[in-house]
Amino acid sequence: MDKKDIIQKIIKHKKQPNLRYRLKEKTEEFTNTLFYTLFDIDTAVEKNLEKLETDFDTLTDLACWDMDRPCKKVWENYVGKLPGILEKLNMDAEATVNCDPASLSIEEVYMAYPGFYAIAIYRLAHELYTIGFPLVPRLMTEYAHRQTGVDINPGAQIGDYFHIDHGTGVVIGETAIIKNHVKIYQGVTLGGHFVAKSLKKTKRHPTIENNVTIYANATILGGTTIIGENSVIGGNAWLTASVPANSTVFHTPEIKIKTLPNVT
Image (cartoon, rainbow, N blue to C red; front, side, top):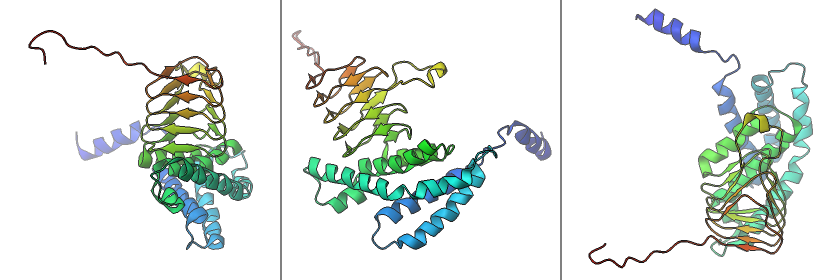
C-alpha cells in the first residue's frame, strides 16, 4: 500500500464532520482563563472578560452545530451568572477550610486542593449546561477530571458549602442531587444502578440530603436512592436503597483468623 492509498483510506474512515480537537484545546484555554478571572488577584477582571467573550465566540463557532440555535446569545446570559458562581465557590472554599484540619489557609484551598478545583470547574460548567450550550460543559469537567481524578458530570445539581476531601476517584453522575453542607471523600461513587441508553431522560443517580458525610470508597447507586439528612455513610459501604435521616451506615469487614499450622 503506497502513501497515496494510506492517505485516502484514512480520509475515508474519518466519518465525524464535527469532530475538531481544536474545540477541546480552546475549551481548556477558556476554562483556565475563567478560573484566573474569578480567583487570581493579579488578573484584571475587565480585560479578561473581554478576552473570555472573544474566546467564547470561537467556542460557539466550533461547537454550535445547529445553526438555528442562538448560541451567540449564550455568553450574555452566562457572564451575568459569574458573580453568583463565585459566591458559591467561596462558600465551598470556606467549607473545606472549616472541615479539613490539614488546611493551613483558605489560599491553600484555592490553589492546592484538587477537590475544590473540580467543584469550581463543575460550577462554571453547570451554568452552561443548564443554558443548553452543547458539549463545552462536558469538555470543561473532563479537563478537571484529567487533572484531579474527580469526575463530576456538569448536569449534577449541587448545593452550597460542598466539600470533597482528597478527591481522587470521586464520580458524581449526571442526575445526582447533592444538597447543602455535604462532605465526601476519595473514591466515592454516586452512580446509576443500571446502565441503559433508554434511561437517558430518567433520574439515574442518588439524592444526598443536607449535612451528609460520605467516607472513602462508598458507592451509592440508583435514581430513587435518597440518603437522609445528617447521615454518615462509612467507608466501603455499598448502597442501592434509601437511608432515613440521622442514620449511620457501616461496611462490616469479614475477618478470618488462620489457625492451621505452617500457614502464612
